[in-house]
Image (cartoon, rainbow, N blue to C red; front, side, top):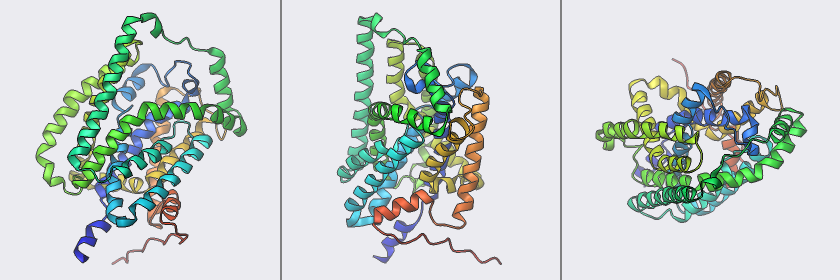
Amino acid sequence: MIQSAAPISRRVHEIDAVRGFALGGILVANIGFFADPRYAVGTGAMPISEGPVALVVSTLVLTKFYVVFSFLFGYSFTLQMRAWGEKVTTRMLRRCLGLFVLGVAHGFLLWIGDILTLYAVLGLLLLAMRGIRPGTAVKAGCWIIGVMSVIWLLLAGLTLLDPGGAAATVPDAAASARAEALFTGSPLSFLRFQAETYPPLAAFVWIGQGPMAMALFLFGLAAGKSRLLEEPGRWAHLVPRILWLGYGVGLPTAVFFTWSSQASGAVELVGMAVNDVTSPLLSAAYVVTLLELVKRVPAIGAALAPAGRVAASNYIGQSVLACLVFTGYGLALAGELAPTAVMGVAAAIYAILLTLSAWWLRRHRQGPVEWALRRFTLFSTTPPRPARSVPRP
């Protein structure tokens, strides 16, 4: 019994580093929507839709980092299973409820693209499936991705039968102007924008990202049960193959996805089908590349891991800072900045949060959002203990 307790309590710093890295990708993917709120009202204009910045973001970032985050959610669930033992059901139920409430507040007050409510509901499915074997989990995830890809291809075929039905949506200038006015007006007008836009967009997120997120949850569950990130030596010989598949197959198809997203009709749907299958390959190459870099340059992991330890606080923090820059809560710069400037804001926000995360964890064991969620999950009101200081020589 004593011997089995050690690995349960040990924090896997590699997971924290990967999660901290993924936070940067999530920020880059999301900030375009803060910088240009017109997309949220269905005007047909993607945020940062033209130029080199759009090409880089669409190819290397979009749909790639929520894949990593979803995988890590499933992996972390296995760590919680080990730590909570027979209490895993009640605690996970409370945790999912807490995530759902937090997500609703996040969606209405800050970020209409919130993912926490989806994770909360899919977390219940993961809890119900926690007993399946790793191989079965991988097969189930592959089936989900395969079915989704077939659905996209069938829709593409139907579009070819009726080309007129896939005509591009003509942007509504009045709706665009109203969205930007609400978004950059007073705090109350921004809240009105959120109340009008969040519910339908949340449904779109659930339908559009839900199946892929569940598939990656299952992949993470399988990897966690196999302790892949805790015992990287077991798959070190596969690193060249993962990198070849990720960059040799995943990257070219990511370029195709970007090209197809500029089109409409069947081509766009085929691009989505291909992207569903291959984006996990590129995401896996990102993760393996990062782990190899951390192995060679530990300072990289040391810089990223604190943010990964307080990922929920960083996720909410990204929205707070983006709102202060782009919305009526603060500077109201939405629609004012060039794409390169928007990426500069993203880099500044990421640097600020990395610094704050390291500073906070020198004084506390958990981030503020993590503390509140843990207290609710464990049904405890004990205040957080400050981090123990390390005596200097």
